[in-house]
Image 1 (tube, rainbow, N blue to C red):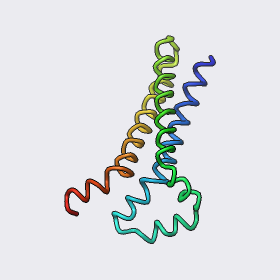
Image 2 (image 1 turned 90 degrees about the vertical axis):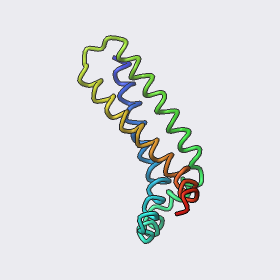
Image 3 (image 1 turned 90 degrees about the horizontal axis):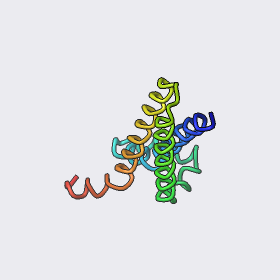
Image 4 (image 1 turned 30 degrees about the horizontal axis):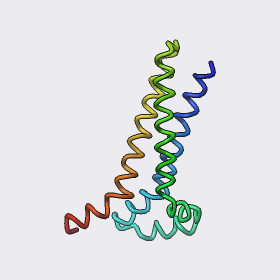
Length: 122
């Protein structure tokens, strides 16, 4: 029973951290690229903690990646233990795939978008 709650908790933690990484680093870059600089200014004034968090984006993404890895490990361990609730494990796997994709897109936007745009001459 303990592994069931542990895998669910780690899956939800990884999703939360992936959303946090997106909101602090990838969302402002995407909004500016789409021409919504005013929305970024409004976001910065209404949530100043995002600016402080974006200064430590390497730590944010490292923590998120570590929790993602732990969540995948816990989910794989729960699947191998023969837990009967296959439906729950399927949903946890789907959520984890989504949060991993979100993390990868956030990393792309935070670290590769500007160099890629400069290389393409945009």
